[in-house]
Image 1: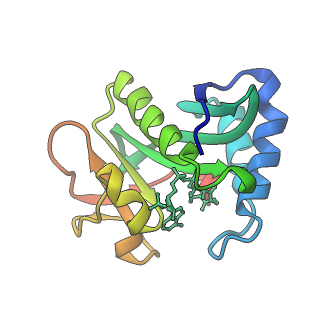
Image 2: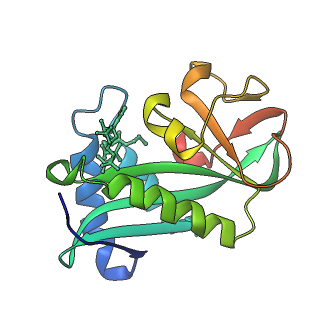
Length: 167
Ligand SMILES: CC(C)(COP(=O)(O)OP(=O)(O)OC[C@H]1O[C@@H](n2cnc3c(N)ncnc32)[C@H](O)[C@@H]1OP(=O)(O)O)[C@@H](O)C(=O)NCCC(=O)NCCS
């Protein structure tokens, strides 16, 4: 579908829409425990939502993406976690998710990110350059779903820890 997708940082008026979109997007997700909206709220409350972007189509918010800092071997080394990303079901498969991901990666580059990790379907995220690395580990998840994108330097070696909102 050929429509203009506008991506911009969240503002206070978007908070309810973001919550609704996140709940809706993850409603029937096979690996969700339906807490993604609470994760976003908690990151925001803790001032740890490093990047939070919304996607609009015709002025209506239809998608959202969040990034927060992750620790590697218990240290912040300018690596970020992409999560969650949500697109309203009726707007999925129209390029909204891709635009949010590419814009989000640009935004963390502006923050001098050295890299980004995520947990998700390899088929979807490979096209943005993400891949699984055996030396970068998120405990308790199948290795092939935990993927990373190096933005500068080398792939770190060690264990990754997300913000406590994800636990
Ligand atoms: C995943 C999600 C953000 C993608 O957004 P989107 O706007 O639908 O994605 P795009 O339109 O940019 O890309 C669609 C393409 O990705 C593919 N795709 C979407 N979700 C996929 C998945 N889980 N696994 C594999 N491929 C997937 C589609 O088949 C389509 O492929 P095509 O371009 O070859 O036809 C959206 O589907 C969503 O909100 N899903 C529910 C929440 C979720 O799973 N979030 C990600 C985990 S944090």
